[in-house]
Length: 140
Ligand code: UDP
Ligand code: MG
Image (cartoon, rainbow, N blue to C red):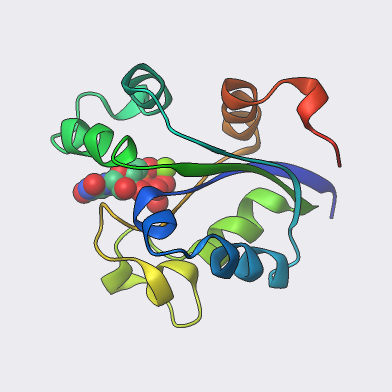
């Protein structure tokens, strides 16, 4: 299995509850390494651009408001089969459907305020990493 990278966001519901360390520990315990990380306040333009794929969905407006409601931590994670490994430890989008031991089952407040984002493919991981990081910020 190849070592790859994925993109993660620790969302405002988690930073608000001081869970940055707790969430990161679950990522690390799942075999992922944080090779870049920064705490940012997303702008409305960034949130709309990042979630542009969802702009026709009924929840888009509220999702953008939520994502700019407080700071987030954007991260690049590295590990074997990183996209799937991260999706597995994140759990299902709706915490009510998430497996025990996943980040969303443990910490998510709702289907919207679900504590973490993770890329869904290698292709999208690259696009999302490039959206928030410059090459010289990926320090390994
Ligand atoms: N979301 C929401 N309502 C829904 C579905 C999704 O508010 O009915 C939010 C939620 O924060 C989710 C994000 O939109 O994480 C992106 O949705 P996606 O289907 O890509 O889920 P994910 O890949 O994050 O599991
Ligand atoms: Mg998604």
